[in-house]
Image (cartoon, rainbow, N blue to C red; front, side, top):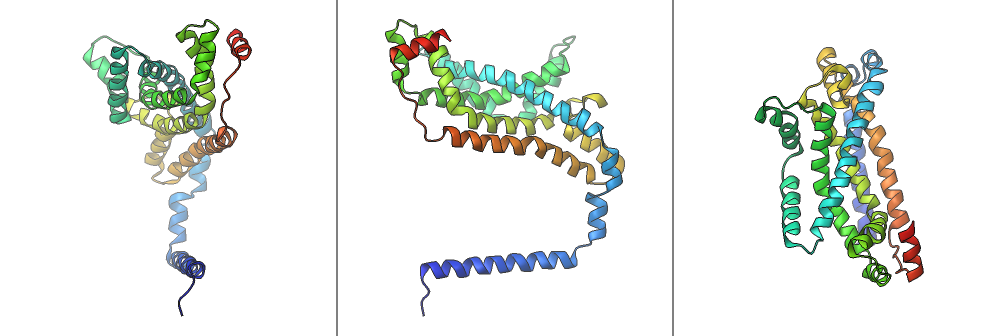
Length: 277
């Protein structure tokens, strides 16, 4: 007797759940839990990482991410406006910039700025925080520029037309009317970019640093080499999740707040009030 489509789906899901239970049970029976605990859940090693893993590793990761994101957001906005410019040279240069830095691994950019520039220009000294800000900002800006450009293009053209009818220049209308509304649209994807930049900040370990400049990955790696246990890697991973999981929830919250909402074209009075603000 042929099964209905609904019944067939229930049978397939039941088989999948059964296989999952069998695999989990087999793992629980055959696994060497003592060795797993010693490798990943060594309480003594984990306790020895505190409070430095928070006061040094976590704090430095947040600082590096904030520096890179702030610089990248400003640079990305400039590049996005160049992409939308009526001047062909600006469009060509910004397009080349976006394709070039989106195509390069973030590690190469970090090494080029942090180590390559001092080698290429002897005597040039770049502060570590400045080099991290430049490297992470350049990497992030190439992606943020496209996100911002898409957000600007999503703003109804009536916004600009209403602003121009009040005598505002194209540049002023873009900066004071279009860009603020575009940011309401692009907040969720920008939050995702912040998450990616948080993880990319782990690559600064290749620049070398003192112990007080360690970020989470370098802190975990150093503790791993000293303890010969994977517990520091687990602790560092949990610290990353402390940052990224709230950002993921924030991104979904912003998507619910902004998703599906259309921005109505303002009246002349509304545009004039917004411009004054």
